[in-house]
Image (cartoon, rainbow over all chains, first blue to last red; front, side, top):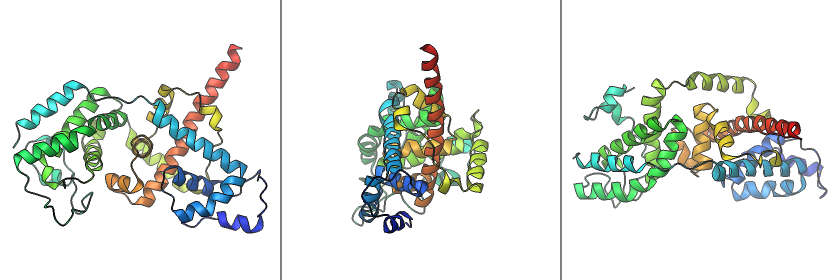
Length: 96
Length: 226
């Protein structure tokens, strides 16, 4: 995956916090890959420095993480009604 | 595509066949175990040991897709009966959850979406066209802070999720709620991994916009109460 993240580090290698990000959309995609556990080692290594020094990216990371947590932890998980389990089990016995 | 009646009938039809893993099975069969020819005893064992443990996740998925308890009931039942009928195309020990989710998603598209009151298809196409034409995928980020949404309750998050067009809702459910990998999602949805990635990205942008609306209406309420 081609991102423009690396090009920013050549012109700006200072360790201080960046207040502005020129590649928000690309960074966001990478952040989602990381949080989804889909980023390769190479991709991770490529963005690690940026993610530690870019304020807007850190904020985006926290937002994506928060939204993911809202979805996994706050939304009610519905259990399958007992009656449906019983119906399915009895229906398959009449097959074959 | 199969009509509802064809799919519901007890005789397997050519159309129904296509709802199930065909050319490319969800998992490649390993060389030493034959994919077909289970005895009745084996069929029931696979069904109970490998399929039934996923029934809560399946019900949850069905309910999030249909947003209706009765439809979710019917969809889960149809899916499990189809799964049993076509159990010979399931390779024992492979990814049963992904296999079942794929059948459920296909049943939903073929049977339920048609009769659904929700004009999801139209909305989805509108959104997809808009997003493609603006190339929003590469430019668009939603201006929202993590702290603004951290107080939202489950019902508000669920309502925001339910308000998304069904294809966008689906990728978020599969990824964030059910924890499928992109590769599994690609197989469940019959789309390339790149499409999974971009659809998920768009879906999340839409969801964040909805969450932002909730968060700001909440903030407004608080201000008024003070």
